Image 1 (cartoon, helix red, strand yellow):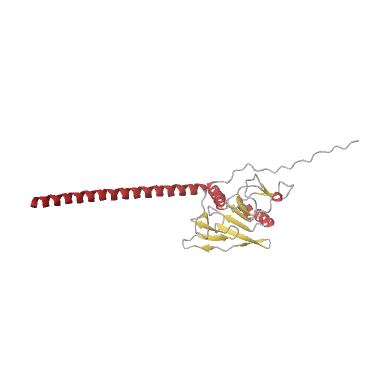
Image 2 (cartoon, helix red, strand yellow):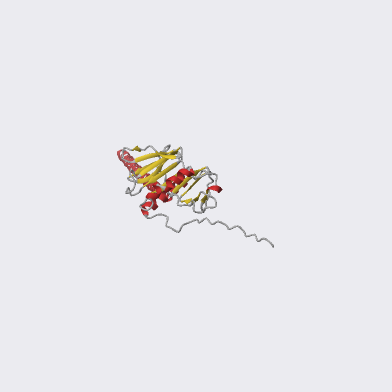
Length: 248
């Protein structure tokens, strides 16, 4: 009697749960800003991977062992596109995670996800409440120490804004009128999303064109004034010549 060998069943790891990226604009806008601005900032680094709203599978053979951070960064992973992030196929797990809290996610963000991120060794776990309804203060950050998360210090700016420093990213994270923004502490420059960068480019181009137009108008005005002065000088010279001839 021969033995029938059945091929191993391939385990399916979904790339999406079919749910929308965020509940509302309040959560969607900061998610897009964070992912885009960080990707732009780290685009010259081949060893930094930034993504968001992506499944991270942390146990091979178990598709239910999955978590989907709103925003995450891995320092030491190839900077390339992925369908999902499987820890057993990658050099390491995330170092930075940002969850954008909402009514439906606040319990999970502060409970189960926090435990999973600690288990995965996520160095910094950030939470941001764009509406200010669920977290006080709306921006909070925790550093992993001895497998537990401890609050990171924050500073209040003169304008009342809140700023915290991410050692993992090397960036400051600020709240400006309740809106989350990343800043480069070395240059003081705010990180921009693609849309904001394009707007800044258009504004700079408009300012350049206006400056060029103003320079041209100033040069044209100076040219006309020079021509008028030269014409006046020529008329005066001609008048003096005629007066001299009349005296002879």
